[in-house]
Picture 1 (spheres, rainbow, N blue to C red):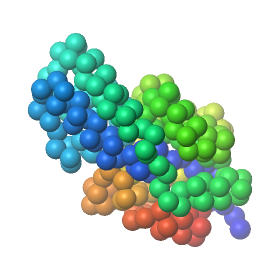
Picture 2: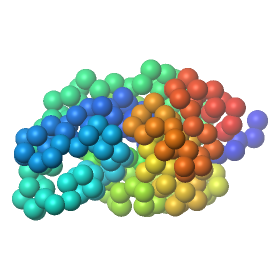
Picture 3: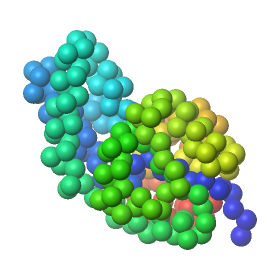
Picture 4: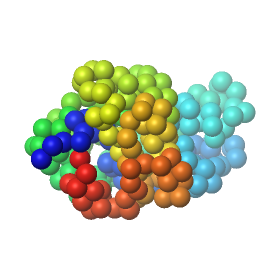
Length: 218
């Protein structure tokens, strides 16, 4: 069977691990700690996928530099208290193992910090399956195409042979900006209607559906 893609790039939070609610709650908790207006659940979930600095600037545009640093620290505090409870979505491990066994190149493009992704790689046991990764503290945040461009350059893969999988419009817009095909998953942070505005190849509603789509289309 002829492969359509050589490189499969996964977002992490809300795509591979079930962390969207933890991120949203941590942002809300940080706001309460500082006594600034608390973002709604929808507002907090919208910024998932962005780098932390970009997410905070979007949600709290009027913070002083000192308040910015404080709310960043409080977010990390709240998130780290939940970090060990965050788990892979059921069925994701099987997808990653199958793609790896079929000799696809695998990568991660995430709004997490490098330290955060490394913790998640270690706790999930998935780190060894990925050939490369990019984090928001290493390059431009989504939806800038830099993460994908750098991954494709490192792994020597053309945009036409690369697929991005993510749960937010930031992921899919990044794919569009990098001239890469995208697939949206609706079980994470952003709803299907929002993802469909970016015209991905598909929007799947579960990990099982994602597995079926990949088997039939890559």
